[in-house]
Amino acid sequence: MEALIRWHHPQRGLLTPIHFIEIAEETGLIVSIGQWVIHEACRQHEAWVKNGLQPMRISVNISAMQFYQSDFCGMVEGIIQETGITPSFLELELTESMFMQDADAVVRTLRRLHALGIKLAIDDFGTGYSNLSYLRKFPIDRLKVDQSFIKGIEHEPVT
Image 1: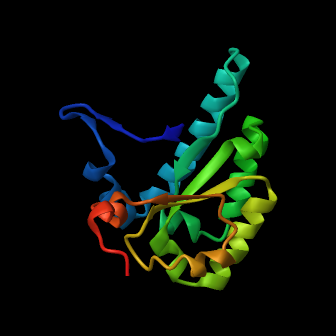
Image 2: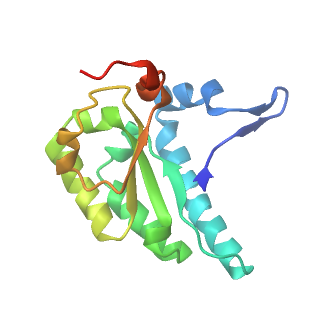
């Protein structure tokens, strides 16, 4: 499962992230929105489990601004403790471009999250650096390849 945010605008109706995420990032609101999304995804997961559904992995997209907050790992750990979710049922999705800034800091943060039992995924792989060997240094559980990376691959000659 993947947690996907939508905004119920009073005049415009249901809006997808393309209509508001950029503004949220520009204003810094993405940090508090992201925290709310992680919390709600974990809370909802636990509500489903308490109502008899089987536990399942739930993925949450993380913005770069949120990820680079100094208290990001502590915030995620606090949400896990508060909601009671088993960490292995939470998967954080990061975009490939986030790995290109301060790779050492990214590795430290990812290792700390991974040590908590959280699953980690790279979303939209193939839209940036796209070096598979470079990925070996990151503790990633899943790679989500962008469709633009593989579109038409069956027609590409092998060299």
